[in-house]
Length: 135
Image (tube, rainbow, N blue to C red; front, side, top):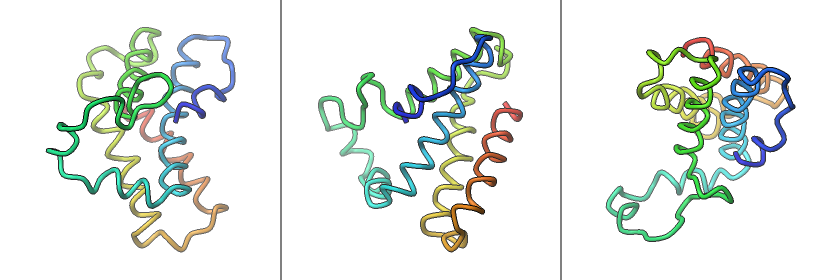
């Protein structure tokens, strides 16, 4: 996800850059789910008690943030730049995450697992559009 963030195209307007950041987070999440399927599944297989008992930077990237924190930061940036109305911000990460996670699971272990990349990529773009517009 952080690699996608650093590779996002530079935008002239800060609001457009913030939106691109949200899209990069979603694209990185889907990419990880498809390319590192075992690790993706494992991340959600451990009981919450094990997450809480783990010390250190478990699941965190070079920024020191975990995927949920990256998503939260991207949404905060959208508010700061005027790309997202502050009234719509509370807990929006749960909605965005649910949409991306559901699609990821459908792709790797559900009825969409037979789709090829040529079909997946346009659907992923539409889902990212839907998340951005729905916020």
